[in-house]
Every structure is written in structure tokens, then in C-alpha cells.
Image 1 (cartoon, helix red, strand yellow):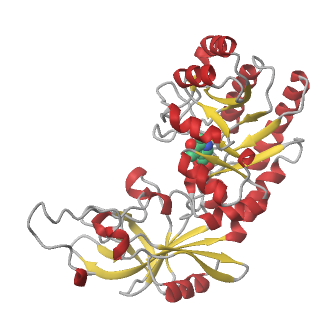
Image 2 (image 1 turned 180 degrees about the horizontal axis):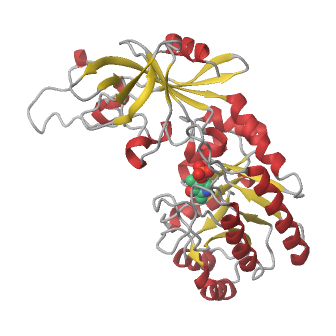
Image 3 (image 1 turned 120 degrees about the vertical axis):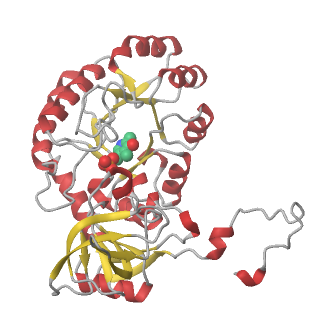
Length: 413
Ligand SMILES: *Cc1c(COP(=O)(O)O)cnc(C)c1O
């Protein structure tokens, strides 16, 4: 998307606002599909938690995607967006048996990541096919917050527990129709990933009725110039070869599945915020925007770097800025950034704002969550209204009798 288009969206819908480019989402989807054109059956299940607006889910549906969901609410969003239950996989962790049963009753593919629930579910519902989430204990990436395959991870059933798992399957007579892993958020080294996939193939040989093998996600996208990104074409070539060999040995064509979130939507998103104050201090120049970690928490939560550009002054000379929010906490979006000279009222665009941005937004400081706009075929469509004061009050119960103070004043609204 061009800066002028973003600027006109900020003018039309106000700031702060999230903008998503449908064209970029489609091209990422097609790129991944092409990379695996040599397998006979490929399924991409978009990870809803990255960006869960129904319009985005409908776009994914139109592209032929399935969905990866982690809560019963995400399952319901997917069904509302028109997905048939068979195209939804439900991969929770640490949720109750009751919630898993509720998802199973809706007809979606269940994926179980611990032996306790597996045993309980299998005993009660031996006829419902289940996928199992395996932890291959492979470190992908370096950040332990986003590497979920290693030994201390809470995710998945350890490959060292396969004998126990097989015993449960045999005793309950349940049917395992899929094997799944999700090793972490970044595939930096394709060979490490292929090594993990070998472990998955070895595990798969224990099960006779598989329909699919799900390799999770971890596709790394560039957040700044020069960033390493996953070479999906090379991964596609190498993994497809191994997968086809495995299917031959297994004696049946299986479906190869992935669950990309970030890869599909990160780069398609822009977050637009308005500069309220430019504040010169003894040590730096702060640009304070009408936002904070209530709208975009990734830089503060795990040090993510989002490029920031001043779309109101693309030709201006560059200066160093610290871009901060308006929340009463330290909420630094970026320090020592070279940005075209900023004036109060300018609109800053934060890049890579498609994944884990709006979905992590909150009402901290009693601020409204932003609007969302979809840019589709040269037109801007509002896909979520900015919140209002009513949203802040929703579900609050006014205990007027408790403190002898008046009912919430209508005029305060
Ligand atoms: C979050 C998640 C994904 C998506 O990860 P990305 O890094 O956004 O691609 C896929 N599968 C599972 C099980 C997840 O929890």
C-alpha cells in the first residue's frame, strides 16, 4: 500500500486505526501454496489468533484456507465466517475437557496436547478422531518465549511419552487421525525444521489411520531491512520431497498441513497513529502518539521492532526520535529511530501491524480500542468501528445501593 492511501484512510476514519491490505494477504497465501505445489494434498490453516476480524476470516475462506483455532470462541468466529467445521482445527492448550467436548460437538478437528485430557476424551468419545500435538524438543529460534518445542515448554506431548500415549490409544480404542507439531515462532534454519519433521515422521509411523500431518508454523517474516526471513520456497522443496517419501513408505497419500499466522497477515497490516506532542528533553526528542501498549503491545511485550514512518512528511529531513505512547506506563514503540521530521498532528505508520497487534489490544487507561479498515481492490472498507464510551461501560454492574452514591450519571457519557 502507498503512503498516500494510508494517509487518506487516516483522514477518513480517524486515528488510531489499523489498516489491512487484502492483496498482500492473498499474495502471501499464494506464495506458500506454490512452495508446496509438489505435494498432492496441502492444507493451510490460518491461525486465527494473529488477526481475528471476521472480514479477514472471510477473506481467508475465499482463498481456500482452513483455520487454526485455540479457543472455543475462535471456533465460533470461524463458523460465523462461513467455514465448514471440517476446515477448522482446534488446538488448545490447558483448556478444560468440557470446552474440548463443546468444540467436538461442533464438528471441528480436535487436537490434544496432553495425556491426561487424551485419556479422558478417548475414554468418553472413542469414536471421535483426534489429532495429537507432539513436542519434538527442537529449539527453533533463540527466544525462549517464542520457542515452544524445547524441553521446558508447556506445549505438546513429549516424544519421550509416546509409549504411554500408545497405551492410552490402545486401551481406549480411540482413533488418531493426525499428528501435529508447532515448534516455535521462527524458522530461521530450515535444517533444524527438517530435523524436527523427521521426528514427526518417526512418530507418525506408530499410527495406522492418519489423514494428515500438521507442521504448525514458525514462518519468519522481515520486520526491518536485512532481517532473516524463512525461505519458504526452499523449505517447500525440501519438505515436500521428504513428505512424499514418507507417504510412499506409509502406503497412503496424506495431507500436509501448516498453520501460518504471522506469515499471512503481518506485513499486510499498518497501524496509523497521530502525533499529539513533540517534546524535546535534555536527552532526546520524544514524539508522543495517540496510542500506547493498549493498542500495540509487541514492542513492550517482547521487544519486537516495528518500522515507523512519518506518512505526513515523506520528503522531510530525517532526525532521531523516540516514539512513545500516551499511556501512564513506559510505552516506548521505538528509540533512536531516524524518521522524517515530525510535527504535531502528523500521522505515523507502524509496519508489520497485521499479526498479534489488534488481537492483543486492551482498554488499559480506559481508552477505546482502534477502528480496523480493510483495503480491498483500491477501496477502504471499515471492518470494525472504533469503540465508544458505551464499550467501556459494557458489562460493568452499577452497585448504586452499596455506597449511597448516585447512579452513573447519564450526562458523563
Ligand atoms: C500461534 C500459533 C500458530 C501461528 O504462529 P505464527 O508464528 O503466527 O505463524 C500456529 N499454530 C499454533 C498451534 C499456534 O499456537
